[in-house]
Image 1 (cartoon, helix red, strand yellow):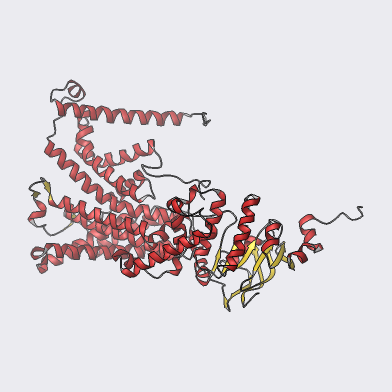
Image 2: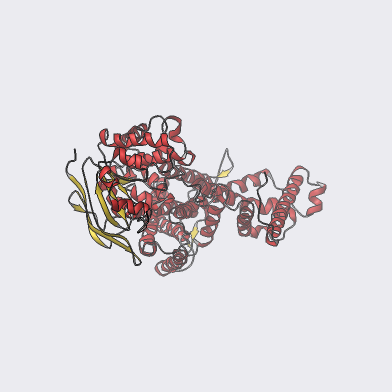
Length: 264
Length: 368
C-alpha cells in the first residue's frame, strides 16, 4: 500500500540549553502511509513536528523531503514544498472569518500580486474564485459544520471541536503532500473523536494525503495507523504495527514505569 | 452578579475626578456656545464668558470643512502608524518623516512642472504626476527604512525598534535639510478654481479635493486589506507570524508590503499637505506625525477604520473646539490652542476608553 519514500529523517538531534530534546532520531514516511507518533508527555513529539515544519532548527542530522534537504528553510518554504501541520493548542486567526482562514492558507499556491488586486484584472478575479471554491470544498469535508452561515463568522465564535476541524481544513487548503496532525482529537468527546478518526482515514483514501499524527488516544491510534513510532526522552524506543508496539515491554515501561524489583 | 474589582486606589479616584471634570468643562462650554448661538444675550452664556462672540453659520461651516480636510490628512498618516503597529507591534515614530518626504518630493516635482509650464496649462495632469512621484518616493523611504533600520532588529524587544525609529526620524529630517537646505519651501500657486470658493457650496475647492483624494485612498486601502490575498496575508501576519508562515506566507515580504502601503498613504497625505498649506520645511513631519499617532491611538491602534475615524475626530475637534468650547469658557488665546486641543482629545479618550474608540484588546484566552 505504501509508495515512494517521501520523508526521511536521518539521526536528528536538537539540544535546548543542555537538554537533549531529540537524540539521533531516525524516521521515514512513505507515500500514502498513516504513521502515528506516540510517547509520554515531554518525549519530544511536538519538537519533532516543529523541526519538520521549519520552526526549530536541529542541532545535528538531516530532514530530506522528496530528495531535497529541508534544513535552513523557513516555515513558509516548507509549506510551499508540501508539508502542512496543525497544532496541539489550536492556533487559528481568531479575527478572520472561517472562509478567510482557509483562503489565506492557499497563499503560497497563488500567483497574482498587488497589482492584479489593485486593477482587478480578469486573472486576479479568476484566481480569487478558484481559491474560494477550493476553500468551500475543503470546508465541505467536515459536513455542514463549517459552511453555510458559518463561512463569514469569525473563527473565535467556533466551538472547540469545530476549531480543531477548521485547523485541519486550513492545513488541507495549503495543498500539501504530508499533513502533520498534532493531537487531532485532544479534548473531543468519544463520539466526536470516533467521527474524526473516520475523517483521518478519508484524508488518505479520498484526498490522497500522507499523514503523520501525534496522538494520545490509543483507540484512534489503533484504528487508523499503518505504523506506530514510540518516542521517549527524545529517542525512538519502538516501532511497528500497533499490536507489536502495544505489547513491547519497553513501551509499557515508558508509559507505566518499571515493576518494582522483587515485588510479587 | 457583581464582578469583584481590586480596591480603588487614590489613582483611580484621581482618574475619575479627571474624567468628570473634563466632561463637565466640555459640557459647560458647549452649552454656553449653543446658548449664545440661539440668543446673543443668553443668560448662561453671558454668565460663563461675557466677551464670547457669536459665530455665523458661514464660519461654522468653514471650521467644519477645514477640520475634516485636515482630519482626513491625519487619518491617512495614522493608517501607517496603525498598520505597522498591527504587524510588528511597535510605533514607528519615523512615519511622520515619510509624510514629510512625500510633501518635499511633491514640492520639488510641482515646482519643476511649474517651471516647465505644465502646472498652469494642465493642472490635473501635473498634480497627478506630482502625486505619483511623491507616493513612489515615500514608499521607497518606508521600505528602505524597514530594510535598513528595523529588519536587523526583528525579534528584539519592542522598545528597541521604537527608540531606533526616533533616530531614523532625526536622520531623515537632517538629511532633507542637508540636501535641500533648511527652511520653508513653497509649492507653486494653485489655480484659481482651487483657491476660490465653489459657488453653490461656498467651500474652498482645495479642501474638497483633499477630502475626495483621502476618501479614494482610504477606499483603495480598505479594498486591499479586506478583499485581496495580500490583505489577508497582512492580517494573518498581524495575528500570528508563526502560523502565517506555516500557511506559506512569506512574513518578511508581507512586512515590506505593509511598510510600502503605509508609506504610499503618507505620500498622498504629503501632497495634500502641500495643497492645503502650500509650504513645507524639513520639520513638517513632526507635529502632523505626532497628531496622526494620536489619531491612531484615539481610533484604536491596529484598527484601520479607527485610524481614519480618529483622524477625522482629532482634525475636527482641533478646528472646532477653540471657538465652540474654549472661547465660551473664557479661555484666553483660544485660537492658539489648536495643538493643545488635539492632545487633550487624546488624553480624554484614553481616560474614558483606553483601547481607543474602535480598539479591542484580544487577551490570550480570546484567541482561537
